[in-house]
Length: 384
Image (cartoon, rainbow, N blue to C red; front, side, top):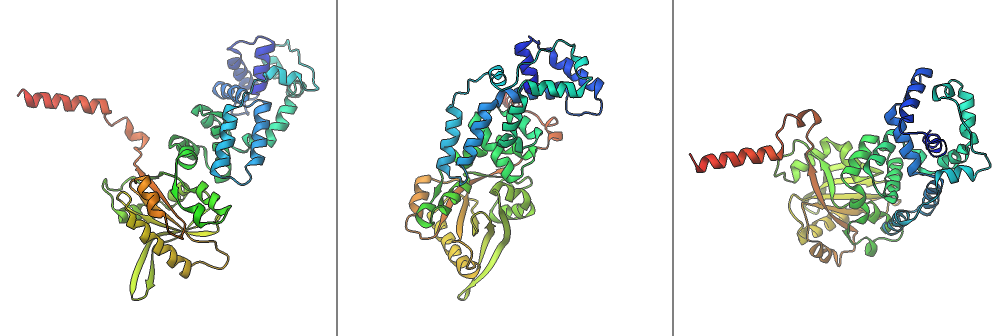
């Protein structure tokens, strides 16, 4: 539909009002059809303009090269898409097909009274070829609401492609996709430097996959948590909202246990959280610290990895991985702290997001209003 409108804007000189006329014509002639509002038709044009044939084909080619994703090759492919020049015009694409360009002289409402004629007209413009490539590309795998979220974000082409792929693989709804874009998941998972020893302690390609799945920082929505939350408070909230927690962890993580008890010698130990990663086929031991990273934290986590390896790991499981979540870290200190450990450990920051419900936002004062009130109060205090 977007290509149909763009084509006639170029060939027939259709003006900006055509979208409004089309929306009205569809509403009058096909009242049972939904999703063809003026706003949606505008998005369809934006969609068609964003993903012409050569872009769709580049997505397909990129998809084939990323069958085993790693930080490096994902970054390379995203940058390649961002830098690539896509200059082929829509009209040139349509006219380069075996079909001849269409001459339409009827008024818009009259065109829509004959569905078969309209559809065949679109096909004669070469839309069949566009549709064929479209259905093979990753763009066709996510729903329309998610497409609008990506179009609204104005992301570079390569990063848009990455979010599409993630949305399909993770099964995100459009609302979840919006949150991931707003919290800059691409930077947290791909472009940020990560502190771990996976390359030295895990075989390839498991080390690459573990590094790819790790985020820094993690962002947990924990409304209701105290401002200065300790480890137990955070654990309580993470377990209470386990679905959202696993969503932030990534695809294929299963919850195993919280405060898992292990008796080692004559002593009792409790691991904060234990997950299982299906893509890695490995247990993940998560230790939560409500303070910035300290070198001794790595030693404690290394101990728990050894215990889980001995007590839980089966013969078909890969090496257990440790994830240390701290309230900040010095990356140089953290990297030094991992040197010498044989067990795979990743160290990431975490942030606690306390989103304000939409229905309360309007009732709360803005930052500017608070500052103005404080200034007024201080002035009165100085000049009673």
